[in-house]
Image 1 (cartoon, rainbow over the protein chains, first blue to last red):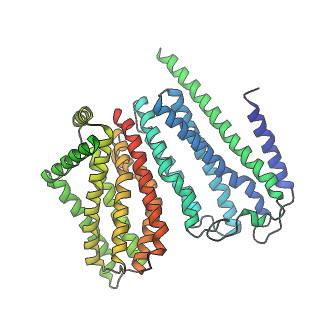
Image 2 (image 1 turned 180 degrees about the vertical axis):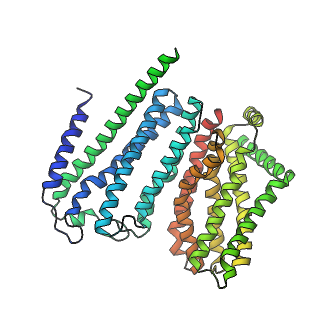
Image 3 (image 1 turned 90 degrees about the vertical axis):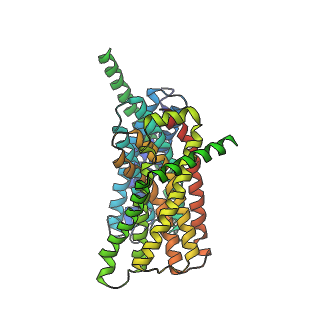
Length: 223
Length: 223
């Protein structure tokens, strides 16, 4: 229990977010209307994705310093979890965009960034599947993971600020704080960010445990 | 100091190899030439000049594909035995820096030829040629440093040629966006201040990619 408190915290926070996010009063704004509640689900996905992918890179770095199969599995599963969260983020964002901007997909720097991130991690998965030798697969994919993260991630934070964007807080658009005049939304938004991020780590941990077990069964069959 | 000398020798070797097997070099020049000609056939023959944004986009797409093809052979053409030989002789950092340096010069040459042909066939609407060339040089450096490590990664896998494109493209999209933006500024003859922040971001990006390649290549090399 001592090491698992954060899972309890994730459950509590997400139950709170689901209830409060749908029930608490939100600012009445034109166009956005009730869809502003998506803020509690769409935006935290990207926070969670970034955190989980950072963890994946962390494990990749550790793998290169001292290779063990466990670290490779952890980094792979964290990357996969990041991809899932990215897809959920794209899906929630797409629905939101349809109702507020009028299109499922717009040519927006943040959307392009998300698409690039998905392409990069898609390439990562393809790269992983094109190796026969496990050690080589682990090492080369760790290298690509770090390289892609270092080359692309800074830009996801810089590019949207350089160009015009439909998203708040970019290209002269008012940031989130401007819509949330009474700061009530923060009471749900920050717990949502923490909750979804923790859930991401939890999912990555579960996926890694399944992968460890599979590895163990496989090793036993070989022996 | 030793490192610089090793880089010098390796680059010299690459140039000498290129000069002796002129087939690849002339192949790449012909690739640029025929791509430009295809574009000319498809667009300009219908009469009338291309609009500036299309001219710009087309030019960068040609350069992108040329770069992928030109850099791809960097590590793919070297046999395993020869790589082992280098491994015994020089340090890995020298290998990657020499390859990046060589690819930068190669892409600068190919880009220059490509620009000349392109301007000849499809017209030259560029108003600020020095800025355009500076931007192209930054592009060559960026493409070379990103693709060199990617080609090293792809060379380790089984389906190298497909991997080269899918691993490289998403990493190059952010760079490409910046390059296209600056080159649009050069086309329109905007003053230098309009492009300064993008150019600085490009320089920073090139430095990040170069530094990460430098750090990661020794791990790739070991396998």
